[in-house]
Image (spheres, helix red, strand yellow):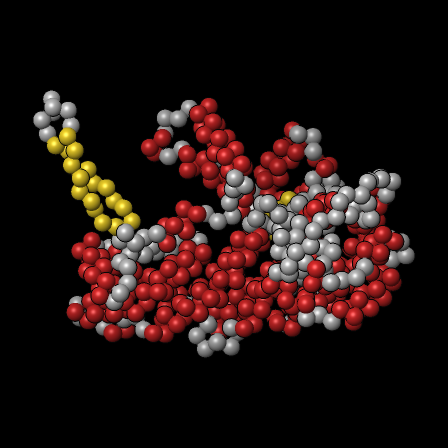
Length: 472
């Protein structure tokens, strides 16, 4: 959009695309970031009465954007300590003679000389990577930086302290969960709607663990406040994403929400009843549409070992949960026999694996749960983040740059298509982790020049010196 991003303009652009492809009444969900104009534009779609499946899934907020807001609120509380580390590594790398001296200091301490990349305020994961890559050099950086400060007569208050590095170390361990959640929820080769609640549980557990920490307590409180702002009411998509997982179902969802409630004091009790009622309502919509379809059974998939992320579900008392699940689901609706049959089937987390293919399971067992298989198919393909689409838009910026500004539109199309096809062959399309971005922080070890000479044609009567840089 080359004009103002108002709600009316956003709606007009999206609606024009839908009309162009004649899919206006076939859109199940739209995933957007948390800009207020986006939310208002969704209301305009609601007024046109073009929502599918009761409209419960139509508007999804980008999870990764919410995680970014949560982490940024915590970074503000520890910014002073992180700022000192940032200043130190920036100062060391700002001068070649100074960096060479630091390299000798590293060698004396038995470490490999290297540079350190500073972070970018708009990308919290860059702060995480900056701290993670300099922790191994904490003593060396402090010793060299504080020594130079003392030589220049700077006040001791500017020096790096062990508390600064303690905060950095603990904060890296703390942010690891949020970093992993961002990577997981940005995936494109597996359903992410079924992963959202798992990541919310992991993050809530981490917030609870560090809430009383003397140095991180204020940051955790700020993050917890932001966390509750967006997830004190669990999105129905996330709930249904785990309900259609045969390893969890409704009883497992109740346990996960109870676990989160105990960690962050969020009351989900009323929402569980609402989720159950919506579940039967949505199922009835699909039952009217697909109740007469028939399908053939497929070969059953293999089972594999249990992933560690399911540890809290293993602790759940299966006999108690099964009885409570069956009694509540029977009273939830007089119809929906297929849904009741699925929810009352035996729950066993021990039969599951991190390689478990949820879409394949529903394809395999569609002959048993015909209507539910159509519902699960629609639910599991809804993305919970906009990262992959944003990466698609940023691809052109990596191709059209100042050094390649004479490319024709046809050549740009060729380059983008070839790149995408090659990544598709390697299953690397829209990688959730920007490898080049990570390498900018990791592969900055000091390099050494190797001087070489070579003969050039006699007519020049000169010698050219080549400089080859290699990683030590």
